[in-house]
Structures are given as C-alpha cells and as structure tokens.
Length: 234
Image 1 (spheres, helix red, strand yellow):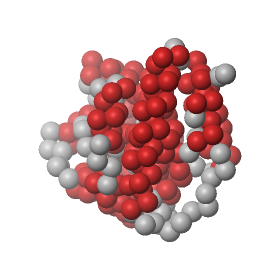
Image 2 (cartoon, rainbow, N blue to C red; image 1 turned 180 degrees about the vertical axis):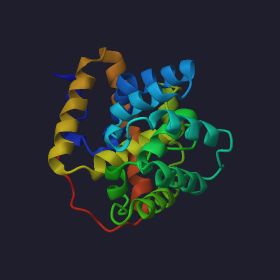
Image 3 (cartoon, helix red, strand yellow; image 1 turned 90 degrees about the vertical axis):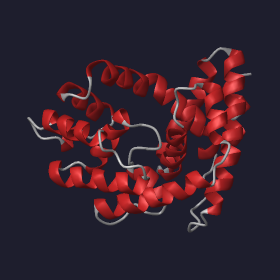
Image 4 (cartoon, rainbow, N blue to C red; image 1 turned 120 degrees about the vertical axis):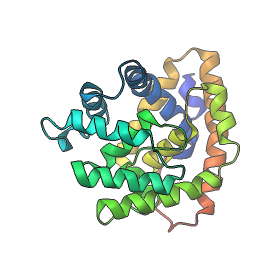
C-alpha cells in the first residue's frame, strides 16, 4: 500500500498543511534562507526570491538592488506587531510597486512572527478583494486572529523540523484552502506523491503529525466564523 494512502481519504487543506510547507521548505525556502544568510539581501537575492515566489514581473529593471537596500533598512526597525509590519510593507509596495513582494522579502530577513502575503491565502480569509493595501490589512488582521486560535501548533511543527516557522504552516493551509479546486487537486496529488517517496518511518511520523496539525488548524479556522465556502471534494 502506498504510504500516501495513510491520508488520501482525509486530504483536506488543514491535514496537508504541515506536509505542504515541509516540502516547500526543502525545495525552496531552505536554499533561499541559506543564500540570504550567507550573502545578505542584495540584488541577486531579491531576483532569486522574486523568481521562486513569482513576483519577478513586478520588479522593474535596475530596482532589485534598491529594493534590497529598502527592506534591509526596514529590518533594523521592524515593528513588533503584525499589523504594523503590514503597514511598513505597504509603504514599500507603494514606493516600488510590489506589495506582496515586499512582504515576501521581509520574511527572509525577519521570519519570526511573520508570513508573506499571498492572494490565495487572502481569499481563504475572505479578504481577497479590493485594492492591494486594503487586502493586505485585512489579511494580516485575520491572520493574527487565526494565530491566537491555534495554540499547540508550534510544538507539533517543531517535532518535524525545528527550523520551520509555524506561521508558514498556517499560511500553507490558507493557500491550499484558497486555491481553485483544480489547482488544489493537483497540489494534493503532488503532496501525496512526496509523502510516498519518503522513508517509511519518517513518512508515517510526518503524516501523523500533519493530521494532528490539521485538527488544531481546522478548529481554529472554524472559530473565525467566516462566511462558509463550498466544501472541497477529496
């Protein structure tokens, strides 16, 4: 029996969130984090992150280095609250033309207590409409509420990989939840295939932990009492 069959009957966005971000961290974030840690945030770092996070088209020629300088300067005076951090990213977005890009670059400089803005995640929190600054403000306000309702999640994430950030697991849930059905089904199949390729003992542990994470995430998300969306068919 394929190891992915352990969760194939319960492959909801919440149950797949831990698996989804662990895979993304292995493939993308770990390498980019190492690059920024070694070389700092410079034009090349901005270009690499923009390419991997799909906002390269919003960066005009010659502005990558200036954007790197801007976010690096912000890192030294990074606010403590998520809402204030969102305002800083909005200010950068207004200056350089990439709101979500600013939020993503800042994550690589100041990941603790932060998550990048994503349009699918915003839709999951029912704040995916209107001007970009409005959507970002609504998103981070709602995200903070979700954080407050998911006690115990960080400890589960830490069991799989201590270098992961719990906010990104919540973000992965929201991205999966906000995807169109066809995109979600494709991503679900990718994640199940990923689990099937892992060593059996680790795959079972990751699956069990991801399911436990899913219980906490689902309960917290339900407490937000957002307008009901059409249930996904798994």
